Length: 225
Image (tube, rainbow, N blue to C red):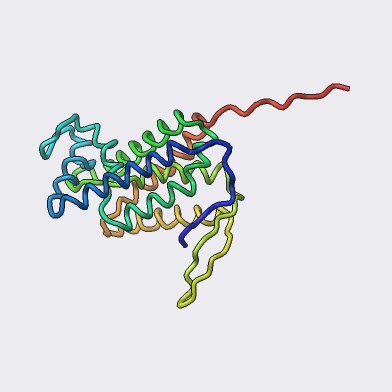
C-alpha cells in the first residue's frame, strides 16, 4: 500500500515540514553531484552502530560521534529512499506539526530520529555499516498520527495482482499494516540492508512522546443556567 493523501486539513502553514523536505531533497541532489564519492558521505555523516555503542570512531569525523544521529537523518541512499520518506513526511507530518506547533515539532522529529538510530545500534552494536535516512524520524510521526487520528481517511494506492486500486482507507489500517510489516521483517531477520528496528524504535518513540509534545487542549467553557 502506498499512501497518497489524507483528508485532514491543517490550521497552520506547515513550514517546518516543508523545510525538512526541502533540506532532505537539497542534500540528496548534492549527493548525486558527487558520483562515486558519495560513499564517503555515508561513512562521514551516517550513524554507525559500533561508534554509537562503543564511543570509538571508525573513520574521520568532523564532529562528535553522537552528532551523527542527527546528520544521518538528512542523507539518503537512492531515489526511492528519499522519495518514500518525503512522501510519508508530507502526508502525515503537517498534521502532527499542527497539533504540536512548529518548535515542538522540530524537537520531536529530531528526538524520534535519534531514538530510532540508537534502537538500531542496540540491536546491531558491532555493525560498522552506516545508517542513513529520515525513516526513523518519520516513523515517529507515524506513531503519533496513529494515536491521534486513527479514523482519518488516507487515499491509498493498493496493487491487486495486475490491477491497481486507489481507495480511501482509515489511517489505523494503513499505519497498522506498515508497523506490522516492520516488526515482521525485523524479527524475521530480513537482511535487506534496511534498519527495521530503527523504524520500530522511532514508531514507539512517537507514540510515547506525543503525550509530552502535543499542545494542551483548551478547556471547554461551561455555560451556567
